[in-house]
Image (cartoon, one colour):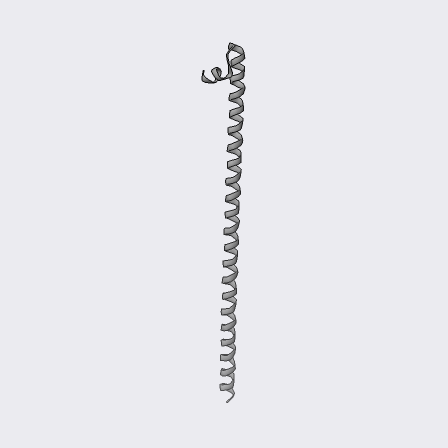
Length: 90
């Protein structure tokens, strides 16, 4: 009789551990999924910020180039006694 009670107790404990282990696995899976979502969100935000900075840099470079061209045309116009428009066409 003791053996049956002992086997029953061991079986009950094993089932309890198995259930606990399944809950732990589910929780770990949920945590991993949440972490993956957080990483993906962070990557998306970083990519958007990088794109925005790239656009700002390109716009600044275009403005600087336009300013340099304007100053070049003005200097050439003064040097050749012509209008800035004529200097830009040269």
